[in-house]
Image 1 (cartoon, rainbow, N blue to C red):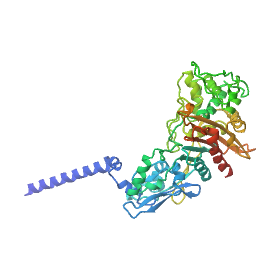
Image 2 (image 1 turned 90 degrees about the vertical axis):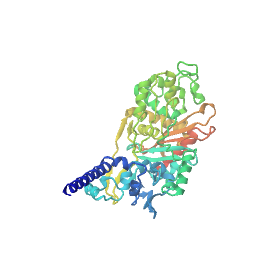
Image 3 (image 1 turned 120 degrees about the horizontal axis):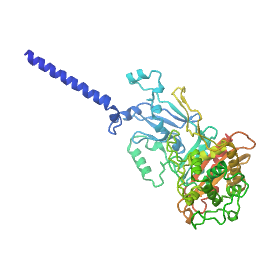
Image 4 (image 1 turned 30 degrees about the vertical axis):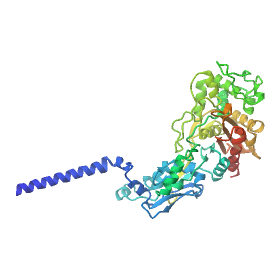
Amino acid sequence: MAVTGRRAGTFCLLLIVALCAQATRVQVFRAEELNHNSANQRPVIERYAQPRGNLRVGADSVTGSEATGGRFDFKRTYTDGPLFAAVTGYASQTYGNSQLEGTEDALLSGTDPRLSGWAVWDAVARRRNPGGDVRTTVDRAAQEAAVHGLGGRKGAVAAIEPATGRILALASAPSYDPGSFAGASAGDQVAWNRLQSDPDQPMLNRALRRTYPPGSAFTVVTAAAALESGVVTDIEAPTGAPSPSVLPGTTTPSATGARACEEPGQSLETAMTLGCDSVLGHLGVRVGPERMAATAEAFGFNEPRLDIPVRAARSVFGTRTDEAQLALSSIGRDDTAATPLVMAMVAAGVANNGTVMRPQLVDALTRSDGTTVRLMRPAVYRQAVGPGTAGQVRRLMTDAVENGTGRTARIPGAVVGGTSGTAGPGADDGGTPYAWFIAWAAPAGSAAVPPVAVAVVIADGGAAEGTGGGLAAPVARAVMQAVLAG
């Protein structure tokens, strides 16, 4: 009996050891795997077991939480959801999260250890702190002007405060209501499926995640490169661009622009004012691929990790050495493609004396009681060009608004500098082009850095009206007016 008892005790001990080993394997070594298993609903249940922290625009919360009485205690709600969707993204019990709802999920859901002064004790006690708040950089008036300006047209707007990099507006059209699928009901599923199947892709953030050929709007970069490299030393002097112009090494006519662009000996000032692409393409070839690429990259092109903190798509300026391709790339065609965010960085860098600030969408992270978790500070991204070059490019952009293709961007009582652009598949043979306008604005007589720079792209304006100056410039003007009025 004693032997049998010892054997039974040993067997039980082995069972206990095996049980402990299995529990340790599951709870420690496989914890991360199981937490992210799609079949595990516990993280979602815990995430929505309490009200979520809020995203704020100025003093106002543009999000909220409401009790559901169901499996998930609370679900996300949105105030003016379509107005701020490109900023907030969505938080869905079924489909996860995106944009700031995603990048700041730990803070908003209350799991961020920075929310507590007793993080170790909270972890042991499994106590969750109230969700924190995210204070965005967005200016409500600028955002409303951007969204209303786009109206029912497909396109995007990005506006930046040049001296700090704070993003004042971020709009994408068509938009969507992130609250329509925030829950887990059959209605939420229907709303999600409808958005996913919509050919206009309303859930695509065109300001951050879509690139477009910028056309002549890119010539701001080319002009800056030509001046900074010494290829052009006097903006009023003839550039030596041939007329009629053909792409180097080919018999293909180069894009020209206004009839006056066909006259030989155009200066950089005239070319930028009238939108003479042939002159800018010629200058891009003279600058050369290395210096053109270096200048473009200093403004944000070819950057694979541009986080605001949401990651933007990579804007591209090609580095191929074929002169014909370089000429086209230098006027925003061929393989040149940009997000509205990066084109806004171009305008902002010129406005800020050649210094490009790192764009940011968040001003501060706070606890639910308003105390600060993290305060964001301005940071330099690159010194794209020197102050002298930036001043000359500002003059070129101002001339384009006062006397050239950007007249519709004029604002009474303000100095406005801007450049239009038209490019895209089919633009040269009757197709619908992309209409661009990039600009900055400052109160007349002010010596300070202009308070706003903006980029607008309209993707479906129609071939007849789809010019940057005619279609996109009025939207840019409305956004800049909203900021100046504030």
